[in-house]
Length: 246
Image: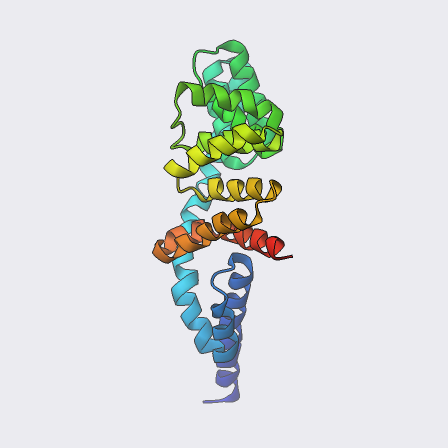
């Protein structure tokens, strides 16, 4: 075996470690993994890739959905020129929501609602877009309309978003009551986090810390794929706990 072979082997060891470190930085799994990678070298990196990176590949399926969604967006944008119906605007608005383009989603629901008001879903979806855009004052009446129609709207996400919108518009009493209701019927990390933010703003640091910790405590019973999907909320919970310790 010549020096070229050993160079090739060494190069692949470095590649394994680089892949593992980059994935760790981007995904932020449990902290102990970085020590395994650094102290065990390529062996630790290989173990990390098997346990964390390969299962993450399952999440790529949602990435592949971006392309048909974008294609459908372009189709609807063209179709609306000839047929600007409420239904077309609602479908396009939902696609924009999924794509993270909340301003365009809101504009679509504005056009849909201008044509008909017999369904609460466009109001709710517009409220979601308004929350994402930080326009909580506009979100309140839209979310209220949906929750008055069905308190469990969107698997109870609606009530949590409305509580958050109340909190962000200075309606602390309404927010507190609705958050208490929401956290009794929902285990959504989004709702828990927004409740913790509300408690922190109210000067109730111990309770805020408790609800942020509840998000992290859920990891113990979560399957791996769900932990990966919830990482954004784990990072936010860690960040809030760090601020509460200052």
